Image (cartoon, rainbow, N blue to C red; front, side, top):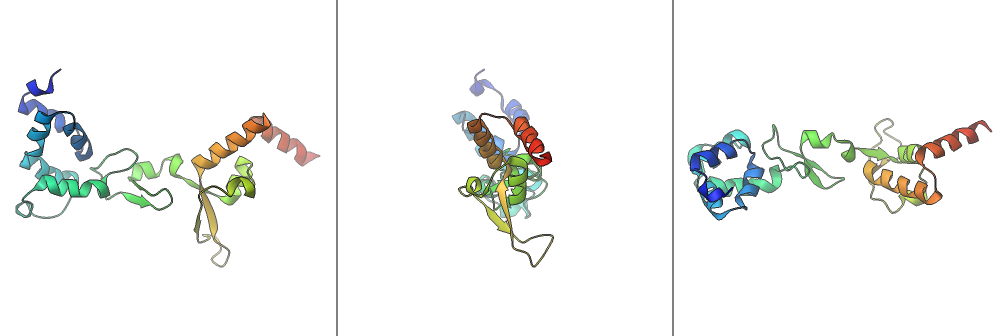
Length: 183
């Protein structure tokens, strides 16, 4: 299908189902589409107010598309690339990414403690030494030393490589550990 042959009304109908970040991506596909969308002041004013929920009066924005572009970097989730969110995305300091609430809850962004990495993934201090870590205040004991956090995804990968090098899988390692406990 040639996008140049689509009517303006049909283009606007398609765009109405997309969020701001995806509209900007679609604009890169075709020059006619880019011009039609970039110059549609009403589209960008509506997206500023209702999509991104940026406060202000319509008269204040002479160039609403430029205002949208100014917000792209700070409002776009790094994982799902969505922009039109209920609230401004969370900036995760450990992963150095801007994440929406839904993506922030994903297991790949859940940090784990040193103890969990050792206990559940059979790693030792030497295995964890090259990994990126972040220290946070101990939530259980205020006077205790800080808790070290690691990326669960990276720890799982290192653990898998370590077990592969030994020629065993996780279940075998767990069985061997249980046998050693009883001896």
